[in-house]
Image (cartoon, rainbow, N blue to C red; front, top):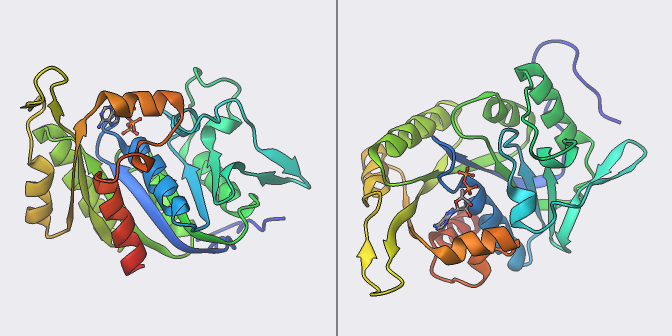
Amino acid sequence: GASYAPKGLPPKAAIDVKHVILVLSGKGGVGKSTVSVNLASALSAHGRQVGLLDLDIHGPSIPKMLGIEDQKPGVLNKILEPVHVTGTLAVMSMAFLLPDTSSPVIWRGPMKMSVIQQFLTEVNWGALDYLIVDLPPGTGDEALSIIQLAPNVQGAVIVTTPQDMAVLDAMKAVKFIEKLEVPVLGIIENMSGMICPQCGETIDLFGRGGGEKAAEELGIPYLGSIPLDPEMVKAGDEGRPYVLRHADTPTWKAVDLVMENL
Ligand code: ADP
């Protein structure tokens, strides 16, 4: 069983993981969960043992993207068994704990923290090479809790769309992460232009280049851009990761960075 510290800072959870990577955005709906799913799938396709922890309580979409939304974690002696997508990819999500996915979740900070602690101490993750953590957008309790509770938090990937507003919020997220002394691995610009299915020309719906400029300004790596692609929506809806069929997404750059540097 887990030991909860009654007062002061809780101890680091005893989860066996070499590298914890956070995926964060300033705003919702920019593709953060998509990047988390693809990053985790790509690392697991490299044969690494990967855990994917979905902490986006307010919009948990990861189980759907992996086609496991009808599954529930097993329970044995009060220890939760994560849902195994493959032999090397295990998932735990807030969504698994909700009675139905359409009901909103209203949890206060301390409650979120105890759920997060439970995810780290009372889930049978096994020995992990990587734990990818999909955080809710913004700079909230979940990020603080995971950084406080998890061992080996070694990097964060920031996802943004090209619009000024999204980029400004992404820059805030970068500064927040840096303040917490977690290295920022880089920024991915998602929904960056759209390839016209008719003529093949690129249409700049939301503009382009905001993510790259922000990365330059902040002195952090720019990992590249992902265009708006109907394939991506389909992949998400059908529960099969896009990255496994597209070798040219910046997610692979993030994977290389993660595997080379950590
Ligand atoms: P977030 O986690 O930031 O809220 P999601 O990853 O859930 O965002 O993405 C929101 C929606 O946009 C999903 O339906 C997803 O499939 C879709 N989406 C994400 N990236 C792309 C893209 N590059 N092209 C097309 N659709 C995308």
